[in-house]
Image 1 (cartoon, helix red, strand yellow):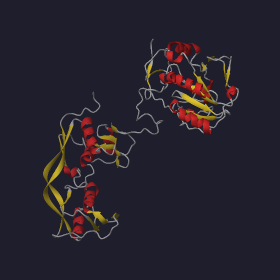
Image 2: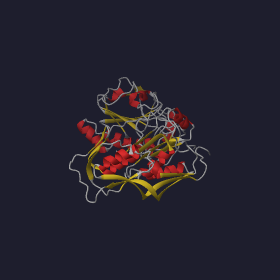
Image 3: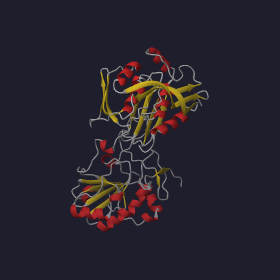
Image 4: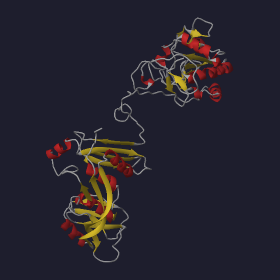
Length: 464
């Protein structure tokens, strides 16, 4: 017979995925036919959110009866008639192999514990569909369980998404457990009968429906916890967002740039978090680019107009496990997204500002154990702080627009105490303050790594 197939969770759970139905037929384990629970409610909500639902500890209403019951010798099956026994209600479907496989197991439970436990399978499918199933499955032909069919009433009380879905009532009709078939073990049943306490895990169903064309990450605000293990995204200019660059390495590696020129993307990807080889504008060479293609000196509205052209600033976000080098991943992404730009790090002899000691010998080590780095109204005060960290701050901020980069040739690789009263953005003011503390800033040539960006072809960007 024709089948409508769906993938079964763990090969053994049935999950409603469609409003269509399927014809009953024998199917191999791990293959389930479509089941529709048909309960009311809004998409994206947990079934327990609906006002008419019952949960653990609630009393099931009296007067519930079923008039369509297979393998039952009375005209109606009344739940009230089972008071004094534990009752197991199982929601199942003839289109789900996990449900079908559960029926002989439930029948065995009924045979063994029948004096204290009543098992009642309930299905929304009509009698004809269920009867056809019983005729075609040899494993079901000896069932003695009463099978409630064509019943949607209980769905209002116990909505669910995954079947089999089991409700356990205590002898007084209170809901003792909402669980799955996998917990209905002999050990758990013996514990239940001996103690009256539920040993079952709580089965919670939640289903958020998203369209087939909906982007899982970008277009599903209803999914609050996306459990992202890895994500890489590249965007064009996004109006109304300020340009920014943030990095976080607490639980995952997270890099985010918003509306930043491409030169900043490459700068971060190749500088990494290296305090020594930071590729500022004065340690980069740009080959083959048009004026203002990667950067502009425009300010205010001129800069906004430059961004709005659409191919000057970009966004990038990377989320990755801490075990992976995020900058290697970022470089790979830039190569993939921007194949017209070739990036390489080349050693070149360049003019630099070299930070040196005025005299040979050891520079005094830090005397304080507490570490601090404080900006003064004019200058900086460091306590038990690495000198290279200060050099990095000069290159990335105070002297970022300097013609020459600053390199540390002092040989000081240990924390020091240092206070400089100077305009840190002015080379001469900085040099004077350094000399007062046994250091100096000298212009000289040095072999240093340089980041070279070369335009090797016209950009295609979003072109096919």
